[in-house]
Amino acid sequence: MNKALTLVMTSRPLQIFIIAAVVLALVYWYGRNSISDTMKYDHPLPNSGSGIPANWDATAVKFADDLHGIIDGLFTLSGLKDRVCSSVLALTNDQITAVYNAYNRKYCVGSSATLTRDLDDEWWRPSSGKLGDLVNKLKSLNLR
Image (cartoon, rainbow, N blue to C red; front, top):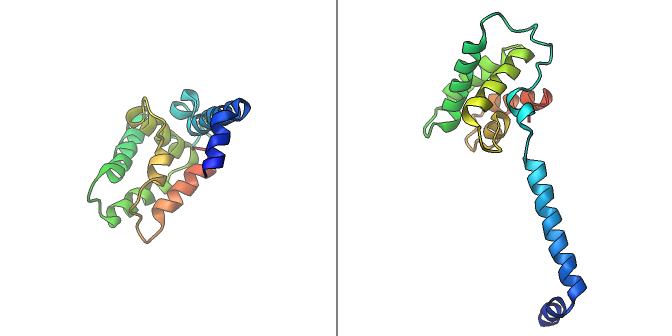
């Protein structure tokens, strides 16, 4: 251990290499965890909006609020999580994307969080698997 530490302390090229590796790792990590604002808040609709009824924006916000409630709630019962996830899974791909955009605009401004990441980070998952199904559906639509 002492020989390795002495080598690092006395070898200028090794010090430069280690610093460069740490900087590259940090840049990679930051880039991997960041998401462009355009894709986060205005992800394009898969079917150009053909699967969304007129005046549906308020409904998308309600679904976003319901999802935030199951994510943010301290004592959210698994039955409620199942109902909310099932209701979102029943939507069209365009509607799910609109809910994703609405959630991110309302709850993820100024952070690297997204709806998909928030759901994926949920530690309490109902045994039915509906929450996992919703995360997989979001990922299949490239909503990261």
